Length: 427
Ligand SMILES: *Cc1c(COP(=O)(O)O)cnc(C)c1O
Image (cartoon, rainbow, N blue to C red; front, side, top):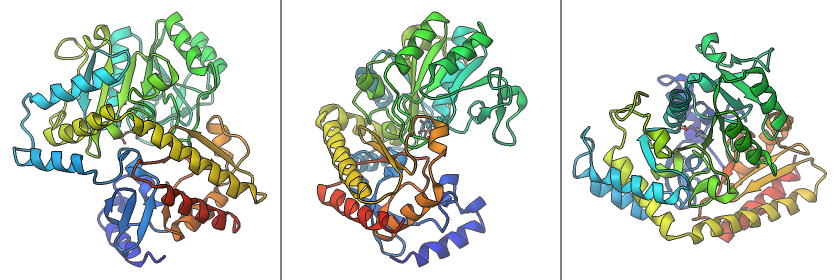
């Protein structure tokens, strides 16, 4: 396939937009080459500026769980648009989506809507600090919670004591309040708690990690975090920006049977418009302004177009529980096909999967950031570009989960498996 026009458009974009993109992972830095400029999308397919049709496995990084331009969502947004696009005043639809979200998600009484997953996680941490009166948080290496300062932290040299900034512009002062633990490693969390007695407000985690490829929590890990939080007066924050309304109607909490104290959302909850949200029990949410002292606000929060898209999406998922089984079945089918294709070669690989999240790593075992980072990136690059050449659009980084959408047909999956068996022989 040719991507000539995309390359020309990228060159032009770079004149006016830093790196030519409005979010860095789109720039293909991890895989090399020029990004594809998309013109439109429908169902499981992307149509690019060169006239290529691609089978999509990123679904806008998660939101398009029912496929692109899902008609009920499109209609709802068009209809709302004619009635005025923003008021900065309360609207009925905000209560409707809040009521539905609260009914679908376990263990929460109230929800506040924001404009992105980043905002949701940033606000959840502030709320946890305000509620507990403590400053520090624990996050896990390789988990992504958006680009707010507190999360752009890596393990420092005194890893057990505090983290260090992993982006210029994040201060040491902020970094000292974020402690880094290892995914699937309870001992690393216990050590941090020991070394920071009565100073930790919350543990924030992706209950199924999707930002170092797909990594599934091992048996007992999340249960262990729940117990540690209970024993140490800390809140457990599940970042369900990826997993919420994707792994089940009630997200990872429901699928894995673990209760979090604060849950954050993004992606699917906005149906493809910019929406984030965070939710918790009344006793925690009561600390939020205007009820309580923890401040949080937004001019466009609860925007009617965004709420119309989100509400329509959630209503559909609420009425069609079979979507989650359908997605899991399709993902299993893809998994089996890929396993078979890879087994025929002597490539070292691991495929991780849960529900509609799946990822391929070119290493033998992946259960945390360190093992994920061992993946052979040169092999991934070749695999990515080989697949792209076959018309299959995978996330342009080995550190990202693939997201299946329910518009994918078994024929699409067969094409993908066929492409993979061809490409894997060239690696
Ligand atoms: C995408 C993502 C975020 C950030 O959401 P944005 O809407 O991009 O700000 C936070 N947490 C997780 C787990 C995510 O996947």
